[in-house]
Image (cartoon, rainbow, N blue to C red; front, side, top):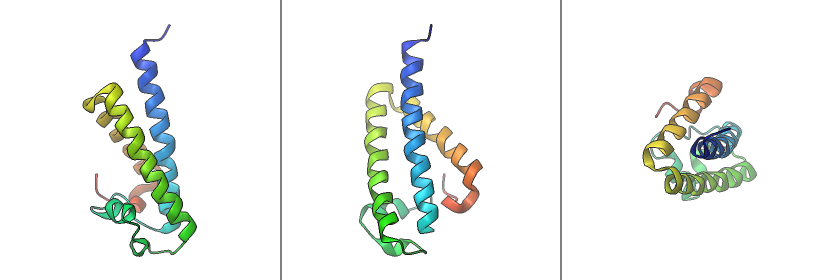
Length: 108
């Protein structure tokens, strides 16, 4: 039998991991370092010039998925609290760094 909190954590973690993997995939298509300071904010402001490869459809999707990430993170914060939500996000970033290296930027 699984602990209810553990299964909830796993569910939030999996959802965030899927969304963040899609952010990484779209960031790679757009050739944008989403982990560099200020880049996410520029994407949210709809500044496509942050991309080194112009792909308007991929950029539009990237912007939407970033919004989805923040919505999921807020829901995770509400349900699990800030420490657990932050731990989940840091684990996901570490796994994405393993897969993509510095292609997403160097900021942690």
